[in-house]
Length: 215
Image: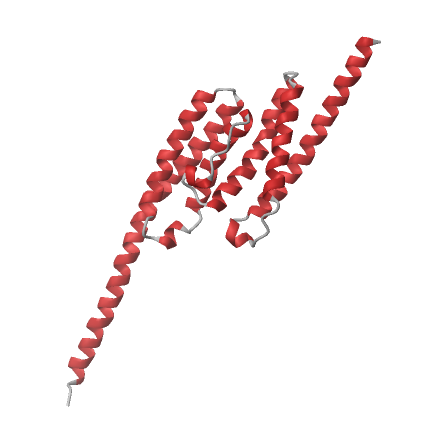
């Protein structure tokens, strides 16, 4: 007949082993998280600075800062590789979205071909949200061009904003799969409507001024 003490000891050893394995996995995941978080914060800072450089008409500095953001993003992606729970916690997606926004804003401003998610090394959901927010960023650039009297460029930027919205609005899947794209598009639509009104007002003012000059 088995000794109750020996049986309980074996059960306790098994329990300790199982919990120990889980704890080791959690410790490794936490170390990955601690490495990825500051890298993601660097991505966000560098991406925001890159977009501001685009608005300041400093493309070289914008590209340099976007490169810095990419390096930090790759660090974060490597850190969480093999830890899907950490990778899907949200902060990595947000960093990838900010990086995509920086790259795509620079392209939209000059009308360049847009790099896709594979080229940027981000997931499609982050790319789509980054694209939508990049289109919203065009409003500031557009207003600056209108103040400079460059109505042609302002209208071109408005057209690109329209194109982005029209392309993304057909993505009709749950927000859980897109990281909240629908809310981002709602914000873009509001920005687009205000911007269209600004452009229309400016066009009418220019036409009136030209008519008065001819008269």
